[in-house]
Image (cartoon, rainbow, N blue to C red; front, side):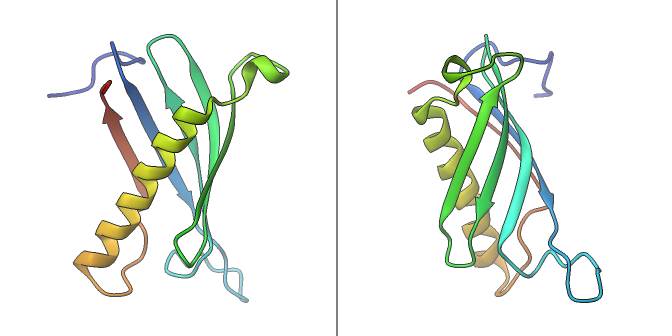
Length: 115
């Protein structure tokens, strides 16, 4: 089923694009880490710009803020950060499981409903 509209009717949508690290010659090398993703987490009523950092050992850190909201009120809630962390960790694990030493996904786009 195609995505209709900018916001999910429930749950959350995670949209992330890999910012490939550069090698010594300045060439993009997605297969070497650590990796950084830039993107957004969107809920029915809020949108957060996020950066996700993935270390070579698999540790994931998510930081972000609500678009248009300054200060502590705009901080990314811990539960959304944790959901994004699990989604990214799973995407990286699946890529490695399919092909040994496979590069990470260039784009991660997932929807998760309420539990």
